[in-house]
Structures are given as structure tokens and as C-alpha cells.
Length: 92
Image 1 (cartoon, helix red, strand yellow):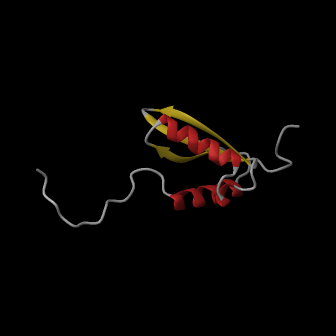
Image 2 (cartoon, rainbow, N blue to C red):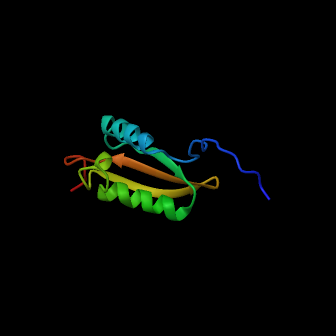
């Protein structure tokens, strides 16, 4: 049986909400340029994160449609990449 003890949980291993705020700000400063936003634990979570970015689910990624995002597996990591594409930057 394992030993019970009180202790604080360790910091999250993968992306933190605050890291998304910072990533979105950097992407806004560099329209059209791709950047790696976060590393997720599974392919499902990376796909879900990319979809949430594209749809502007949180205030960080709004207005909806201003960010493109994709999920890719690179060297065994499930990564999420995004770029800021406001009106005027898109190919019409």
C-alpha cells in the first residue's frame, strides 16, 4: 500500500493556459508566421486544441477565424502550431 502524504502537485508537464496567452500575443506581432503553441499528451488533445484555436473558443484566440492552427506529431510529441491571419492577410 502506498504511503499517504500532503504535498502540492507538480507543475503541469504540458501547455499552460498562460502560455497560450503569450503565444497568441507573439503570433499577433508576426502575422502570417507559424509558431509552435504547445505540446499535448495525446494526438486527440492536440487536434482538439488546434480546433479550439481555429474556432476562437477562448478570448485568447478571438476573433474566431483570425488564427489558423494544425496538430502534428513530431519526434513522438503531439504539437500544436498556429499562425495569425487577420483580414487582409488571407489569399482571397
